[in-house]
Length: 376
Image (cartoon, rainbow, N blue to C red; front, side, top):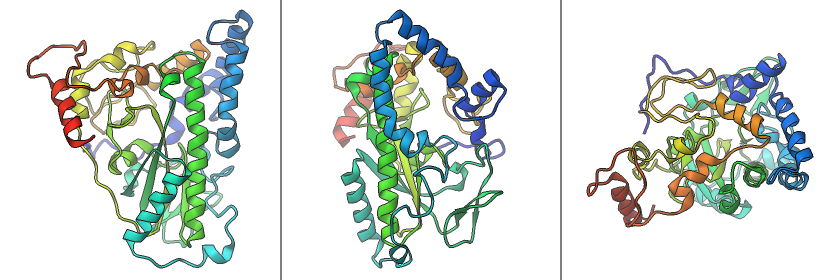
């Protein structure tokens, strides 16, 4: 599932994300939204020119799709235990929170997955929490595990109970029709709506679990790395574009999670040949306007400061990616739109323009047939 260089790998310091580093380089200040200042100038330039796909009405459409996201958790970026992503119950009566319902793991697992589906998830899986995927810190303070009853934040640290050992990972599908229109505001609107949905989903499921008497930490992009947890929970595999690729939706989704101490059964990781697929297919790298996606082999070494080395994968230059967003005046989803799994073009007769053709023993053809055979 992973090849990890234990000597090189360290828990990720989320104050080193591209959003923080690019914003700091631009403004000299540390904060999650400072990178937007330079992008704002381009936004108003696009509006004044009435650029197709970037008009005032296009921006308004995207702004409406992000409203719930900003109300609930603002992407979760540096927002652990803030806004509605609180670690304590929001509306659950204290009597319920302190009255754990007694069921076996089979029953609780069914209840949780049914609730997640009802609240709007498209995919859900459960995994044991591996502490290496919990952030080392954010821009404010570190995350630690300790023998406490409930999760809490002090002046010095975020404290997660050692009993919180499960992650419920959920993914919401984004509108493929809009994602296929990058890099303008139609695709950004689809992404923003995905964030709004995942905030609602994580918070709703967390409150459900708390009302059953168990701890629940709702997370968007905060607190832990979403993609490794999603891979462990059996939702998909890591692609060349640095994103989770699922059999059902490719990378056309947003991921959220809830950390809990509820007794739950875990799912197993899947291998549907995505690594072999990505080794042959270079469509996302070719489609990237920032030249941020690798054409080479997987490595243990990052390519920019916001990467976290030590895991064998294709590292994406996320700082170059974000600089393109600023230059463009909108987010970009070219790598998602270009992916064959997003395009739903998987068929036994599929043929792509690969780096090298090895027909008739084509890896892409083989993976396609395997995917259909096993229902991935």
